[in-house]
Image (cartoon, rainbow, N blue to C red; front, side):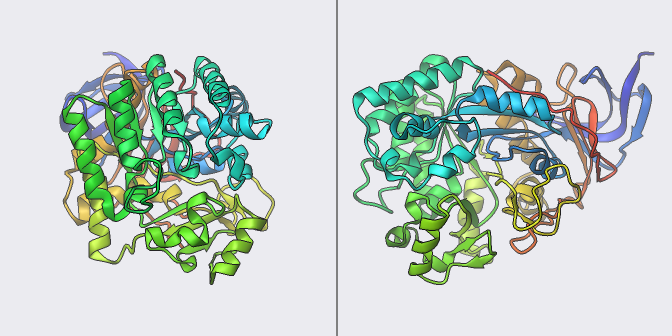
Length: 489
């Protein structure tokens, strides 16, 4: 009998690709799953997981979690791969180098950033390959305006170079520059199509929010898919569509039926988070989304913005400062229904939009665990996947457990799978797949983080393995484990 490095004994194994849902042993060696058997397997180490679900590790397509501390929170939420795709970074090479130098608890990867490339060309900034580049310049109007044909070509040229350096596609934050010419968006989509890689879009305004928008944000995405043949991924469709989500999803469904590839994602929270200097948070524009200054919470102080004058002042002084944007009331059944429709839409991926951590007063220390009490973020950073399982499976029954697991693992893996070979070994649990695995109690798994206590790790995840290495064991973080690997095109 073959002796494996590790055997997970007697758990309920759910493989969303083959449809397996049965009690099995899982044999792991060399960072990969080697055998799944109804008979007992032999291992140098055997862990009894009877009564628990054994599934592929969760894949987060939309995670602004650049450091060890944030990724630890995500690991405690069942995440084994966290990718920065919507915003991306530019250039990607230093981002990959830094992560490899420091080590990461979970797998990581980056798209190239259209927004930062545009800032580089239009504003002349010197990019560092971090998300800080975007937030430091988020409120500068010149990069948000239509560009000359020569500048557009320069943006395309630098993006193309980054794709050759291993970027996982192009992140397009057009919602932060909503007045650019739609032809530029089409040109970026065309570049992605020629490279055979997806784009990941934060949509610009819907026509219901701004009748003067150069193009409806949803129409722009599906048009690009149809005209260029690009795979267009629609980021956090919940927060950009709001109460127009049924129209937007209907449009996506229509173009899919016509052969275009448009994928979607959503997160299970009624509040977003972004830099307070974002164009769409200008005081005179808040009414478009049914917001007021009080809908915005400034993370640095933990307080709601009381009035328009204060909002203008904070936007001027700290445009990149993180802010909650409360667009849905999670206690309102009607608002919750909008949110659930985005989450349960056909083949929608669960994706967190995990936000970076903010150390309010204590010295920044990404290696400290537990985190200091004054470290804050959005609760979705710590709780998205547990919350999705609780909300959609255990409490409402709107998704079966195997389907919810699929939305957290195989669906996001397949968004990248055709273009990124490494992703074809993730999101499934079968011989030959990467041993990125989560073991959890489906009756107990839940989010613990709240808007008042934002960094409490989720509970109910007993074990999380990355490449066969325990990152979470018996519900406790393994602080010395940094097995994360880069995912590149």
